[in-house]
Image 1 (cartoon, rainbow, N blue to C red):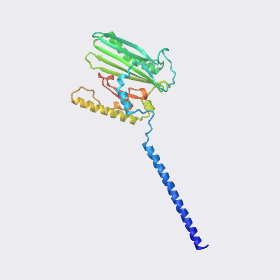
Image 2 (image 1 turned 30 degrees about the horizontal axis):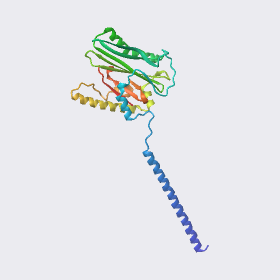
Image 3 (image 1 turned 60 degrees about the horizontal axis):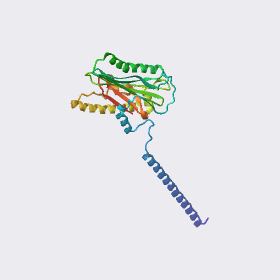
Length: 284
């Protein structure tokens, strides 16, 4: 081949390689730009919300309005498809089983509204027995003995959601010169499997681990403890807390229920064991 032609052919090959290299670099730069844009969009997107999660604002709202829950009624929320054997065919799943509204000057003032669970089952029958023993018998005892200067109220609220029946009952008792005592009892029943609905199952429903629950509880109790200690220094009579106590471990929670928007309430009602109206309410 003629040397000039050989040189020209060699130059053409080099130019082709050069253009191909430029094209590959351009393609790579475009791909890099696209990937950078995708990652930026992912970073700016709102994280996916856990279906069981609730905003901090709503959590505070539920906590602040706890006292307003007790309207002596059942609220049916969502995802319910259950069959039950009723005790009273014409009554709701929870109904007013015992009511007493009466007052006797200088003796007593009663406003008692006690729920019965309208399900014929060993678990719910035991719940009803406990409710009568704790709340109803007290009202009847006051009426019978009339020891004087007693104010006693009982109110409740029930929720049915995701085939879970949750009941929360609150009573206030003021006897003579004793401090007011607030008692809170909760009952949770799995309508599908006809058994108690445990705190672990509540956490699973919410997608909350025990570690997360413990962190939330300890943080809130510690915050209350600090405020209470400051009040005690100022001379106020307060109910002490100890955030390190085992009672605040999620495994030892006894009073809990699920309400609006799957809000999980954990209640530490110190009046259940002592003469005090103090309680701590944690909502997840």
